Amino acid sequence: MDFHLLRGDEPNATAGFLEKRPVVFINFVMLDLIEDDVAMWAALLGHEVAHLKLAHGRSQSKRIIPMQILKTVTQGVLASNPLAATGSAYLIDGIDTKFSRDAECQADYMGLIWAVEAGHDAMGASNLHQLLLARRTQLNIPFLSTHPSSSKRAERLAELAERLSK
Image 1 (cartoon, rainbow, N blue to C red):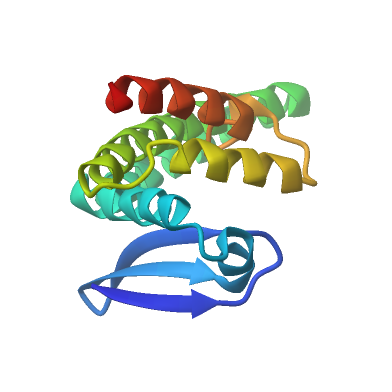
Image 2: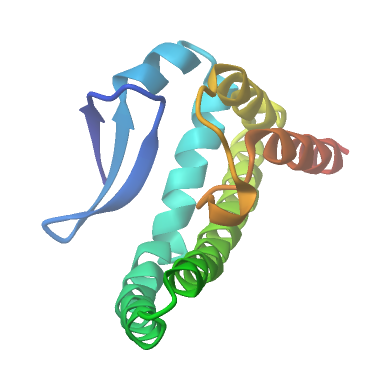
């Protein structure tokens, strides 16, 4: 597995494949945010590796074309009613982002379990999401978001950390 550092304005990390090799991309803002907190690093890296293990990128790729076709057909059928066309586009986007949020929850869960199994503090993931929440500058509309909100994630991950610590 390869690791790459990227530039960016907001903290971010992602996983995928580059020339058929698994790779995790982390930007400098995330690097600065986490600093030397080993528990947060374990949670973040566990989360990204979980996306690879669970083949979330492949699942997303299989959804993209059918969702785009559905959106195009719906907008064509509803072309005479711009409000309905826009509403249907948002509905289709909302359905698609639900799959992404579910994948994020799965990766959170598996990544945190791996971090704890490796001996790291179970609160690392929750603490990371609390930091991300404190930095957030953009409006978060849950229905259209590909990621669960950081406040709910931090809370859910804290509950999981408590169960795993027992």
